[in-house]
Image 1 (cartoon, rainbow over the protein chains, first blue to last red):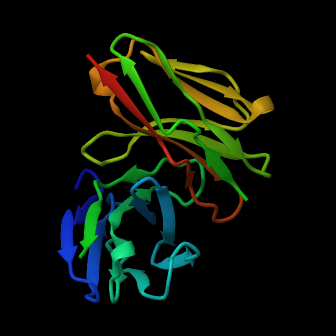
Image 2 (image 1 turned 30 degrees about the vertical axis):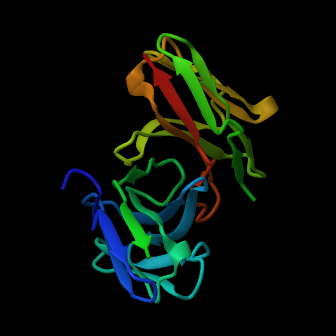
Length: 115
Length: 115
């Protein structure tokens, strides 16, 4: 597609359930990022992929969070045993390079609500 | 460590007023990049500008202008003759050029332009 695509756009789940969020980056973009945006907290970095490898996982808040990327394209962020504090908008971004000069193109996000 | 501070949480102006959004950053790198992104109610972050640390020339794009001052570590954004469509959350961000540095965002400034 022309832009970064994320699904689902909205997800409501019960506490304790697992959720998967998907990101389809711009074709040809080698770098992919996941951020979390909580109310009043700005954007929090979660994980960065260069190709299929994740050189920086430092932002994942707990071991309940994991992410993978296959084929250098689609990425899935998985949250196990969701908690209410996981409620946020999860944003995915891609860029043509992992170097700082490149702008990030963002998707519209997946809004997760944990009841 | 890199850090971006946007001290203004929310600004309200009336249409046609000029407004300046402040951004102060911290970094130990001599080479870095600064960004501004706009997040309208739809949620998708829209890239506005990228500036590298060696270019302190101010930039103007239509009603938007940016003032980069290394001496005060600031990268302020001014909207001239604001319009209702400018209402959004604006994020300033920084990325260092070393290694796998990731984009660090400020907490954002919500701009509300009323008619």
